Image (cartoon, rainbow, N blue to C red; front, side, top):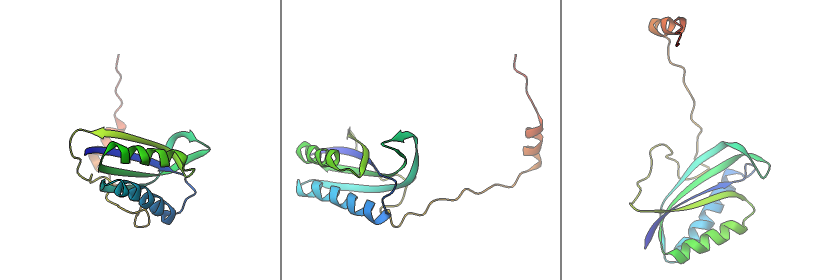
Length: 136
């Protein structure tokens, strides 16, 4: 069996429960084809660089798959017919990929968006903001 990485973007108006059920449906296609979903990561509802099919945001879901080509081809066929999926890409991996620490949520309903915190400004930051450099 070969290692694959599949990323799909679901429409922005789907609820997290719908995204989870869609991901479970895709995972079932792989397991029915005698493959294995090594990991599933939900990256959240993110902004896209440009609108795709009138959507400016999308739910990003990544699968790491260990399966034969036939199961992955069937997954790509089903994703292509699904109207809830805006874009998808499947890549062949040479080495096993461990779960990334950037996105640690496995399900959409458990996802909590991170908050940015402002760090305290020091006197060095204020001095650096005041300095201007001319480059000729």
